[in-house]
Amino acid sequence: MSVESLEEVGVVTRGRAYLNSLAGRRATVVGLARSGVAAARLLRAAGALVTGTDAKSLDALGSEARALAAAGVRLCVGPGAADAFVGADLVVVSPGVPLAGAALAPARAAGVPIIGELELGWRALEADTIAITGTNGKTTTTALTGTLLAEQPRPVLVAGNIGTPLAAHALTFPADGLVVCEVSSFQLETIDAFRPRVAVVLNLTPDHLDRHGTFGGYVDAKARIFANQTDADCAVLNADDEPTAALAARTRAHVVWFSRRRALEHGVFVHDGWIAARLNGHAEEICPVSEIFLRGAHNVENVLAATACALWTGIASSTVRRAVARFRGVAHRLEFVRDLRGAQYYNDSKGTNVASTLRALESFGEPIVLIAGGLGKGQDFSPLAVAARGRVSHAIVLGADGPRLAAALRTGGVPVTEAASLREAVDAASGLARPGDVVLLSPACASFDMFDDYEHRGDVFKQLVERLD
Image (cartoon, rainbow, N blue to C red; front, side, top):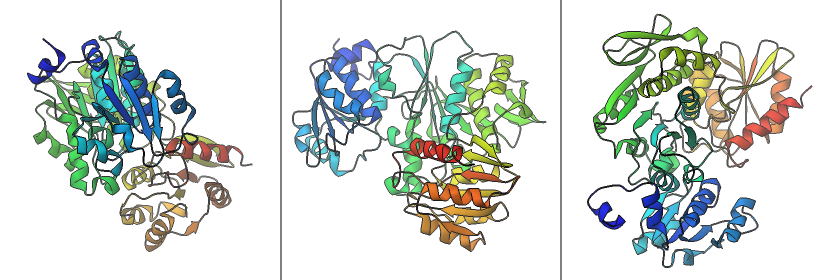
């Protein structure tokens, strides 16, 4: 039976069979950042005839994108590169490119199939996948889950929106391994057959409204993580978060709940100061909450979700406890930078939305000097004004939506200084901080008005803090 006929009867081809089906096909990759480069290289390795296109000029592209030409990829870049889609059999789009945007108009008009790099990488692999999404906590939970799974003998790949494109490892990762994949709403918009064996949704609060339009549209994009699951699969959901709990009605998978606030009849929860699980009719204590190194109640929720994933794979509770106690978090998520004259500096550059910054503020009992601002993505900043009252001794705002953020914070009685740059903001914070204070970069905004991405912003912040004396 051919690949095409397999698809027609609903059998999803993956691995070598899928790669073989790409040979000789004309594929266009839209967006030549990290995931686009990985997609183009995978397609070329499979024998596809690949065109890479990007709105940036050749000189403005990264060195890895420019090197695609030497790998046999035709580069068609810059404004008005519509001929990149001529004759295309398949279009692979990077997450940052909106499906409804002008860049994909030629492909839509021609009826060419459009998928994302996540779908391409997953189809090229055969390994079981644990996919983790949500508004906040995705990266920490993905990294922690990978750490827990590393305690068992199967090979583990941690990839996806966490920074390593799935397509970059699809040719070499073994079929008997486990993939832990952070997935964003942008990536989920462009899936087709993607089917994680475990799908995790941590929480849902308004985000990316500039792209999804409404909170409902954003939730719909997230819910696509369940689209191809069956009753043989697992969905891990936050019982404490109403929009997330409502997704139980939208999946055919077996639901495993987690809760920080109450004991559950079936799931992973906090009880009497312990992470506990009741999955087979009886409760089992996993580890004391006090052994979790990460600050903040939200990180307890992240541990609950990761524990549910680990237990699903059969890892012993004693092993989970040992690994949780060792885990020290990931860069740019409430990352401790240094202590300077009794004030502690934290980098939470990954706090790119209001809900994430709210969680960061709740993680500290000390007075906070807050650095925030950037591209607001259409969010309402008023909840920050309420949360900052009594917590934030002074706020320093910057970026495109800094004035809006400043106005919101001032309504809550928070003193605000507006800065023209992150350097100016760090210098101002250093002058304001007193022994026992926390200086917290948690922007509540995207970074693209001033930086390449949140990682770039966080790295610059750390460099600026380290130079203080």
